[in-house]
Image 1 (cartoon, rainbow, N blue to C red):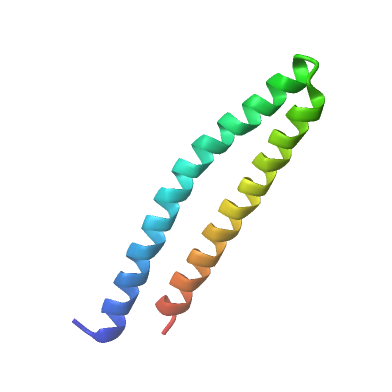
Image 2: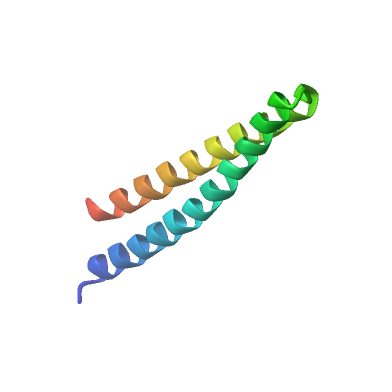
Length: 79
């Protein structure tokens, strides 16, 4: 097998692992958003807002992580 093909397969595996990990993080993130919205609904907005912002930060992290992993994989695919 060519070395380029091996490198691509390694980066594809890393990408797949990153996506799988981020899917698990997203499930936890939904729980965080749910807690934040529930607390706001139960007249505890000062605590609920913190959970909502935490959920937003986690969302941005997972999105950025997926984009960087995909860009790295595509960069090695085009070689």
